[in-house]
Structure formats: structure tokens, C-alpha cells
Length: 137
Image (cartoon, rainbow, N blue to C red; front, side, top):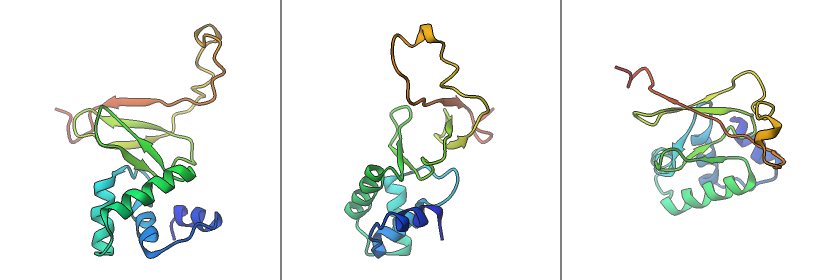
């Protein structure tokens, strides 16, 4: 059973067969699928699942805070089931592959007070960019 499924059960979220298959498709580390990729993988397991159901389920999971939307460089939104674990992203500028990374240190503390312009900073998003081994020359 996936961590996402456990969290959803713990919240009392009604797990229909369609919702379950979407959650199962999203399970794992470094999972950053587009809605179309989620639909294709879900349909391979449950052929009758509609694209609308996948989109609606992803929207509900985002609203619940169980999945986060990741947008990079104008590409299609991707869905990350690991939003409950603090991490940043490493993005390939070539193919768009996204990996979760957990660098040491506290990026919130790295912003000096004189660079906060009076903001009370509560959240930091860091994206590292480069070329993955498949795209590097």
C-alpha cells in the first residue's frame, strides 16, 4: 500500500476505484507526472476511467494538500505526491525530468534580513536546473 493511500485513508477520503487507481499511479519517489500521464497509466489499470475523473481527482488531491502542482518553464503542470516531505526540485533543462532533492541547510535562514523587505517569509521553493545524464553532451 502506498504512503499516499495511507494518508488518504487516514483522512477518511472516500476511495472509489477511480480515486484509488489515481493514487496508486502517483505513488513513489521522484514521481512528477502530468495529468495526461496519470490518465494513461490509470487507464492501463482501469480502462473505463475518464480524463475528467483524473483531472477532478488530481484537483481534489491538490486541494487536500496531499499532492502539489509543480510548474517548470511553461511546461505542463506535474503532480508531486511527496509534498508532505520537505524537498526541492532538480529539473533537466533538456527533457524536463524532475527529481526530488533534499539539500542540507535551511534555505529560509539563508535569506538575510535586509533582503526580506519586511516580509514574514513562511515558505521557500528552490529549483535547481541543469542537464540530466541523458541530455548532457
